[in-house]
Image 1 (cartoon, rainbow, N blue to C red):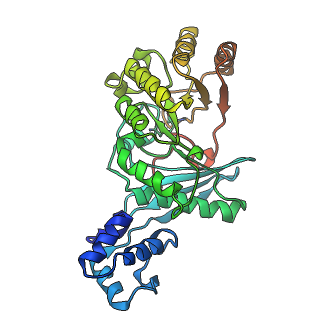
Image 2: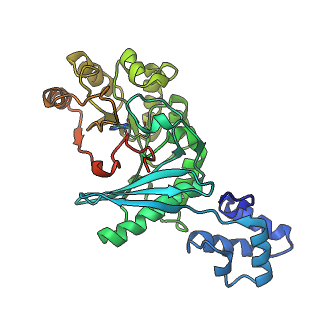
Image 3: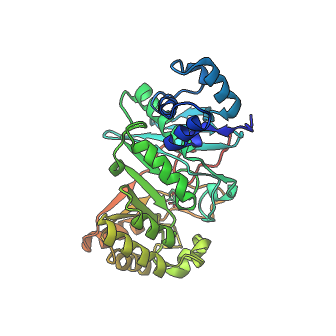
Length: 346
Ligand code: SAH
């Protein structure tokens, strides 16, 4: 149901304190309500038993407590879980829990649909409908954290912003959600366990560096040749590789943190020696590692994963140049939960 009232979870602690002062109450009442909303995860004003009945009624008439609801839950044979979550306005996004031997990772969405137009990604076909609010991102993480305890008997260990959307096109809300995830009132998680993945928006990468963020950065590179990158990621015409490179140098200068390049090798697109040499050259600008991602076909076969010979050649060249490289296998393919497959099929 669409709520007309203002979402109380959109307010900071300071704003809540100010609200109580403005209605002639004590500022600390704001702390109490904040604790109910965040530390205790309350979804109803009725729960707030240390607040008077009158005040609760006042809150109820002024605010809504928006929260997500799991609309569809799917569990893969490999333990991967996908949640389709309904937002307060009935739009739906997806988030995924990926368990491995040593980690449980939450893959969360930052937008409904996506602002960008990567040709190989299912989410790109949805177009961007709206940005998620900080609490909508935070709720996805909490939900997966609970599922991790329930189904895998361990807490969440890592978070990647690799679900639907381009996180750096929803910059403010993504950063606010991370603030909440890492705060003691939220999940108290270390930012070192969080990775924000971007298609590469140079201006915003510089802003991350200026804002001295403490989380990790991954860039979906997929080609280090301008013309090829434009073909598969058309927005790259505006966000050119030279600017991307400069922004990454800036990031490293300021943060001293290694960048991860995500890279898919496709048949007939970037499987030649010139592609590999261009990648190796690009990798020398800034300390980095390369994550070769398995391609998850999304439809008509326009894109196909290159054969193992091409992938082995990539690994050989990268290793010869002492660039750390890992190959990432897809998880949860049977439930369309793998990278690039999130498209609200339900
Ligand atoms: N917009 C951000 C985060 C979302 S996409 C970004 O581009 O990084 C998360 C990752 O999935 C990106 O590396 C993206 O390139 C990759 N991806 C997209 N479609 C894919 C597909 N069909 N198969 C495998 N990976 C895909």
